[in-house]
Amino acid sequence: MSDKDILNAIVNETGTPFYVYDACRIRENIQRIQKAFKETKIHYSLKANPCLGVCKIISDAGIEAEIASPFEAKVAVEAGFNPAEILYDGPGKTSLNISDNLDSGLRRFNIESMTELERVKKITNGNTRHLSLCFRINPLEAGNAAEKMTGKPSRFGIDIEELPACLDKAASDGFKINGIHLYLGSQILSDEQLTANYRAGLNIITEHYEKFYTEDKIDYVFGGGFGIPYQDNDTTINPEYLAESFKKLRVEYGLRDKITTRFELGRYIIGNAGRYLAKVVDIKVSRGEKFITLDGGINHFMRYVMTRAKHRISSLNSTSTDLEPAEICGQTCTPYDVISIADMPKDIAIGDIIVLEDAGAYGWSMGIQNFLSFPSCAEVILDKNNFQTVRRKNNFDDLMKLNIS
Ligand SMILES: Cc1ncc(COP(=O)(O)O)c(C=O)c1O
Image (cartoon, rainbow, N blue to C red; front, side, top):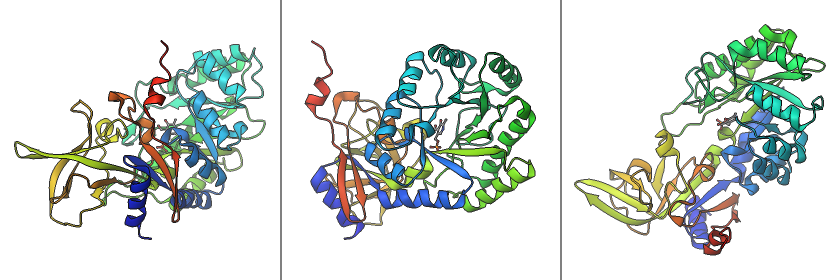
C-alpha cells in the first residue's frame, strides 16, 4: 500500500481531522539516539506528546520518561515507564502536585526554586534522603535556541549567581542535591550550540563539584533541545557527532566516571513521526489573497501562531505543481486561527485533504481544544501498514458531562 493509499484509508475510517503517528519512525528515532549515546540515559518528555498509545511505543523501546504534571506522571506510569526513573520538571510545583507525584512513585525532582524545595520538605516531613534532587539552573546566557527559556530573567530555574548560596542552604536544611538540570531552550539545530550548552553544564558542575552530594555519581540532566528540520533547507543535528563531542568533553573535564548524563527529549523522538490531516471546507479569495479553511486549526495545532514555525504542507489529492500562496486557516472565530502560510497547488478544492508534516511534537498537546466547542481531533498510530485509532474525537456527551447543573 502506498503512503497516499494508507492516509486515504485512515481518512475514510476515522474522518478528519486527526494526527497520525508512525510507530516505525518513533522506534528509529529512539534507536539512533540510544546507539549514539551509549553512556547517557534518555528520557522522553511527555509534554511533546502525551498520547498513551505513543507513550507505550516509547516505553517499550526501553527509555525513561520526563513529566511536568501529575496527570502526565499517571500517563507515563500507565504506559509502562519506571516511576523511580521518571524525571519531574516544571516551575511552580504545588504541594498537591508534589504529593500526587510522590504517590505515583516518582523520586527524581528537578527543582526550580528554593520555595519549591521548601514545599518538598514539608510534604515529606523532611524525609528527602530517598529523593534524587537536581537544581535547574538559569545561566547568564542561553545561546541561540529558537525557543529560549533561560539565560535571562526567568521563572525557570535558579539564577546561576545564587547557586552557591542555594546549595549551602539546601545542605544545611538536610537536602542532598544530586546534580543540575540545564534546559536552555527548544529546537536547536546547531551541533556546535548543543556542544557549547553541554559544556556550560560541565563548567557549572566542575565549579561547584564539592557542594553536590556525590555518594554515587552526580546527575547532569541536560534537556537537550535537540531540533528537527521543518523545512527542506533547515540543517539537521548529527547525534553520532554530538555523542563523540560530549564524550570528549566529559573526558576533558575529568567527569566521565563522575556524572550520569540524562537527556530530556521530546521533539527529536516524536516530531517527525507525526502528521496532521484536515479537510478543506472552504476556499475564498479576498482582495487578491487566498484563504483555505480547514475542519481543524488552532484548536488542534498552535505552533504557527505561537512560534511562526512553518511546516511542510501539501494536499493529498492534488498533483498540480502550479503553486500559489495561501493562508491555511481553521473554522474558529479569531484571526489567529492560522496553521500556516504556504504555497499550495492552484487547483486545490473543497473536500481535499491537507497534510501537515512533522507535527508529532507540540501538536495535539498544545492545541486549544475547547475553543468554540468543535470536536477534538483523533489520534491514530500507523505501524507498517496497520493503523489503529488510539484516541477518538470527543463528542457532545464528552463535552457536556463535566458540567454540573
Ligand atoms: C524542561 C524541559 N525539558 C524537556 C523539554 C523537551 O524539549 P524538546 O521537545 O525540545 O526536546 C522541554 C520543552 O519545553 C522542557 O521545558
